[in-house]
Image 1 (cartoon, rainbow, N blue to C red):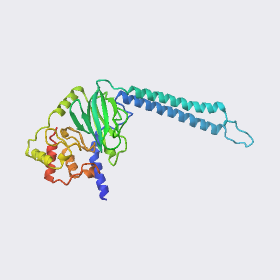
Image 2 (image 1 turned 180 degrees about the horizontal axis):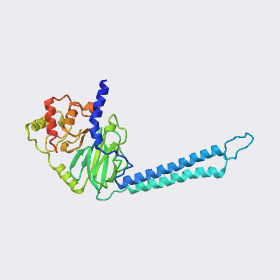
Image 3 (image 1 turned 45 degrees about the horizontal axis):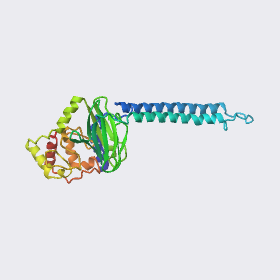
Image 4 (image 1 turned 90 degrees about the horizontal axis):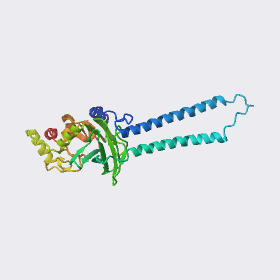
Amino acid sequence: MAGLVGGLVMIAFCLPAVAQAQAPSPLDPASAGAQGIADLYWLSFWIAVVVFVVVEGLLLYALIRFRQTDPDVIPPKIHGSTPLEIAWTVAPAIVLVILFVLMLRTMTATAQPPADALQIKVTGHQWWWEFEYPELGIVTANELHIPAGEAVVVELYSDNVIHSFWIPRLAGKSDVIPGQTNTMWFQADQAGTYRGQCAELCGAQHANMNFLVVADLPGAFEAWVAQQQSPPVEPVTELQQAGQEAFLTGQCIACHKIEGTAAQGIIGPNLTHFAGRQTIAGLVLDNHPENLAHWLTDNQKIKPLNKMVITELSQADIEALVTYLSSLE
């Protein structure tokens, strides 16, 4: 019963964050690369439909046309017919060759990114995504901002197991492998928010290793960059100051980083502009104070086996930490 109640609580927490992101269907493409993949899928689908109809039609025809009602009548011989055997051997081969050529054309069309593409380093952790913009000096987590209408190149790393980076409406999948750097590029043709996810089973919380891609209009992207490059606001109220002190003198400092402070941890997500993000813990929770308090109270119930293992915090510390972190916009 306790496990059931815990599961229902977790589902209740998850619903708001899940509901906010549009279903990430690869059949609803929002980029030229994703459109090519969708076109190839539909072509394969309709070829399969035609093959199914033809094969089942021939089967029904044979059952009706050559049914044996008189045991003394010998049906026409099909087995051993050279023309028929050549036909049903060559026909599938032709279909496979056509699909192979079209697949190569689709892959080639997305192979080389434009020279001026924005470079982003993506690291897959268990179970969250880190996004670093080397040219801009920005590090964030689980929310990837890009300029709409401009190409983006991502270099993919993993510090643990194999993951797979996938933004269904913008690009195909690419493996994220420890000790190996893979690259891919994509471009969001329209401004909007797109859901991404890990597409390779990577452990207990694989299903909750999700992220958002926010394609901003050029002016909005430049404003986001400027905001991310600015130092975090200093705590003003007594409660914010108490939260900063609890952060810097407690367990948080060991794993997390906040620019301009003594917190320089690299194990967990960079929290410099935490309040500006839409979600917590890989889209498990919407980012608002109540959910943040729940997360600090018992994150292992919300996202079991995640790497954030802390001793119990007092209610006063939780309230102060929530107030401080919620001010880091």
